[in-house]
View: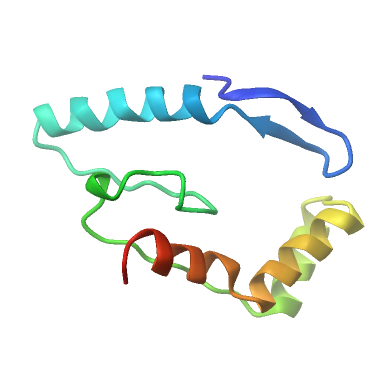
Length: 103
């Protein structure tokens, strides 16, 4: 669905078009609700999404050595690996989830 708007060469990743992603997901969530079907959404951050979309939020953590090796195997550059490992050490996603969903 190409929910991106350009490319970040420093991190070697697409730049997310949040509006396009949210519009697409809103339609998918509505369709699932109309059909009384559950949905599992997997994403690396949660502050972007409305609380009303979810019944349960889980934050998965990883050992930083395992994470670093995993990202290296995926071919991530040093800057991207370092940012991801630092975010895991500082539990950024966990803190964002707690703040975004009043946990």
